[in-house]
Length: 280
Image (cartoon, rainbow, N blue to C red; front, side, top):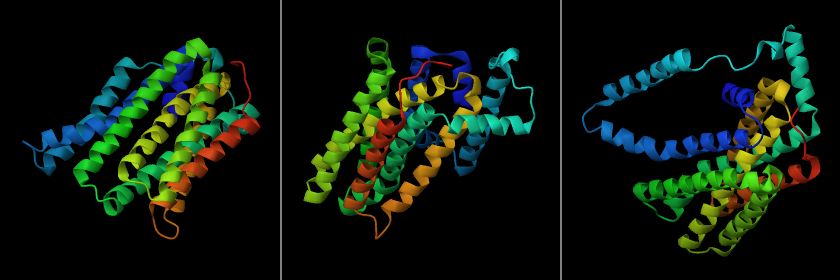
């Protein structure tokens, strides 16, 4: 919650979009770099050593926050009210039509990502017979696609605007996830599934960056509450989508249909609720 709120305190407009793209870059690199680093550490550390490294990481982060990160919210913008006023601010956020449109758009897109993360190990390894190493490579390539899409969208926004780029990302998501469903229905070969899956995952990079930026820009004075709603929405919908993929047994078809359904709901939320807004 705090990372998005701090970003909103410090940036606005296209600068905020570029910052969210940088966050997506970190989130995309982490699952690629972390296993490689873990494997390198295992060459000269046992499991106790790995736990010590895990303990050092938050300590280093704490030192960095204490010495490098200062309060970003100006005193004149800080709430002087009670806990009740904080809940009231939360209520004003969830009743903001445009914000909830962007929030639910991102939330349902991320729920599709959760469905992919939860079901793809079983589908690609158990059904298509990929080895753990080959699956890790596929997962890394999809993460790379997510990074490329997010960085590309950040560079397109100054030219076209976040709203138009978001619409383009949703169009790509519909086409890619629809193609993914067709591969599941037709029992297509693995290469076709992987190509459709790559673009399905990559489209999330465009939408997460632009929808987050538009949502947070619409709630400048209530950035903390807005960030909290975005986080709760994403993880709640994500948890539900993982459960849905397992109904009746995880299969290629349940994974692809769940992803497509989540993306379709994201598009509906955008069409029904999201509107162009000015930063407030």
